[in-house]
Image (cartoon, rainbow over the protein chains, first blue to last red):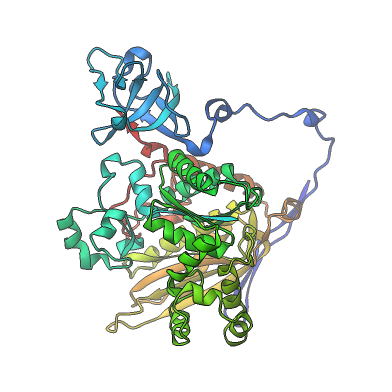
Length: 145
Length: 418
């Protein structure tokens, strides 16, 4: 049930208007839901996908160089800057002034940024100092629709 | 012990995070309406560009030097600032956010004598830089004033400076001019100079009672802090604002009432968003607009008025209606308006019980609707969902010709990796 008041506009002498919006009082009746005490937090994808939100950046794949690894153009990438890059990690590396997603191979003497597509060559770095990593890719997400 | 953390050339550094091609390039950031230089990367500083220089004066020089110029992108800067501050909170529980690019940490959990503050400082620096991509300087010292002084020195070395021992303190104080001390401005520097106080050491060991008597208790405290005596603790986070102001200069002058209405409507929308983000309601809205202040050929005029609602609200639609009435009321033909603004005052906390009892039928689900509006704009970028009076094309809007993408806050702008 509800009841309604009218509203009015008054003009004060100094030109300032007073505005009174129409108001209702609404009286609610009935019993609270017996399930209310059992409400739990919704499941949140962020909690599953992101470990350190303030060091995580969202990016998108714009190439096919990791296709055979299962990372396709248009996939979302969650990049965690706080992680130390390890062998086999998918990383965002700086190559020729551009960021690129590749798999890090640290087995040999010199680091290699591996592509997973015969059309794209692996990138062999001269030494550790050439390895500039902006972050480690924790997840990729693909939408099917 | 306190640590002071300061982001290096913050706005310029933000622009570089997602642009590795600019890593070693000179970058400058312009103020609103592309007015003057408000941030310079290290490389741009080396080229001799000054803070506050008007853009039109150095435009050609910047081009010749190959400097990359950006309009200010506050959405990006605020997000990266939040990330820097949150990272600091991971390292130390007691953080005071001092400004968008500065923070104090209170290292009270680390006993003065037995810890390795050099390692700690370098850990803070490297963690922030790694997690966020923003380079920072760290100064550590026994008081806030000294930690800020230490950070000034950090800038001249490797970005780190710890002042612990008496002998170190003596050296740094003697070599810091009074003008570089936190809280001491230009005029005070000159007055102190006439007394023969030209460096921090002289101030630290000046007669404190005399300073208080002839200057202020603030200066006395600064002197005590410099001598190593703690006078300031971390400030608690600020209380919700008691007034919210949104105002901008127009990209070009406004002569049509409909354009002014659009501009005011946009400011109302922004002000209400701010109001809701701090969970408050307001009762009074003021609208003001004025012509340019510095053009002698133009007649100068300034207009303002305010209106009150009885029940505090955060509903954009209510304030929009009032603001439009105010513009109608205040409008004068024949002037070239240069700036407009909106202010919300009489702010109170959002008390749901009080609000629900007396709310307009039309605005019954106000909080819910406004929540949805805010959520949409947060998710799809601001101005994705608008109230129509804001207008679609905005001839008056701020010129930001060299705006970078909102890499972290807008889905369509996120970086693409090859």
